[in-house]
Image (cartoon, rainbow, N blue to C red; front, top):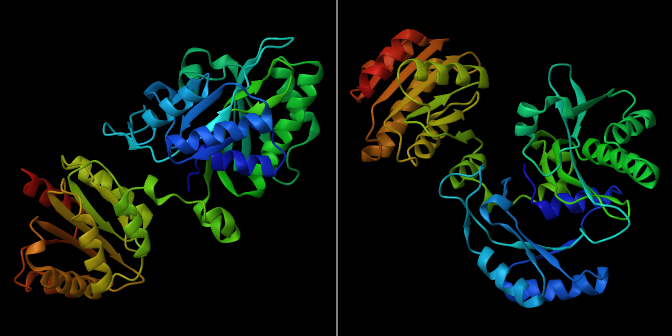
Amino acid sequence: MNLHEYQGKELLSSFGVRIQRGLVAQNAEEAVAKAKQLTQETGTGWHVIKAQVHAGGRGKGGGVKLAKNLDEVKEIAGQIIGMDLVTPQTSAEGKRVHQVLVAEDVYYPGDSEPSEFYMSVLLNRSNGRNMIMYSTEGGMDIEEVAEKTPHLIFTEEIDPATGILPFQARRVAFNLGLSGAAFKEMTKFVTALYTAYDKSDASLFEINPVLKTSDDKIMAVDAKVTLDDNALYRHKDLAELRDFREESPIEVEAGELGLNYVDLDGNVGCMVNGAGLAMATMDLIKQAGGEPANFLDVGGTADAARVEAAFRIILKDPNVKAILINIFGGIVRCDRVAQGVVDAYKNMGDAIQVPIIVRLQGTNADIAKELIDNSGLDVLSATEFQEAADKVQQVLS
């Protein structure tokens, strides 16, 4: 589950991470009021207006702007709220902006020049350990830094048995070229950041940039936070932060129905049980010359009601030209799934206007094939992977 920047910063702050302070506004007038409040609380004269959407690269799309007075706060907030923000991480249609973060200006003059760093905490899947990735090249796309200057990217792996140790936090600060007060500030920042990641059961914390201010304070100017959905039962307060407006409506509906669904850009709908089989099925579709339109795992209880719900979800995508049902009958019997397909097809009537290929393998697969073949419905049955692929290719050509 992704958080907005302001939510991620609030989470960080609760663990003692210094943040760029800000207040959320839903319209231009509220943005002015929040700017006045922020000035009273922090003394900031300028304000940064930031679009709050689940996408990176907001500045490149015009979603982050500096306001030097209250008139500019109102004007910029009015421009950003309601816009369809297009960034390198959104579709061509962009994402609708419903709110902005009015943040303090932290690039103030002082005894030294501000510096920007990159820092993230994530899981290193190759060894099962958490890892801090960081770089002196803050404010830039980390992918570009990795490609052009890989020597400027550092990593610090954390032993889960001990958590982050003081010498590791000091090494991060040393590799970033810090000294004096900034060095001490960075060690505190790194330790608190890792603690926030660990205690909130996150799968990603990305801070870009981490700022060293002109008076040697270290703070998070941005915050991209992704929480592990599987651990949200331990964090009911964090689960309530979910913004459904930022998610695909089809995915939200599928989740409410208990279906594991991910929307993709292809033309062949997939209905599968089991994540591994789903991935193999998507490969099968690609080999047959199609493109998977979704990942949909119906789980181990593929009865008529569940199959019908899955059909309706898949058919909400106008790009779907065919549907491939690929079920392995282990927990659930194939004949039960076949009957579910037949019943769902009859219940939906004219709603199904695309060809359907059904591959059922496992317990009672022979009975299932008979049920499909004798149903009188426009459904193609298959028993082998290659046979299913050939039929996908056939209906697409």
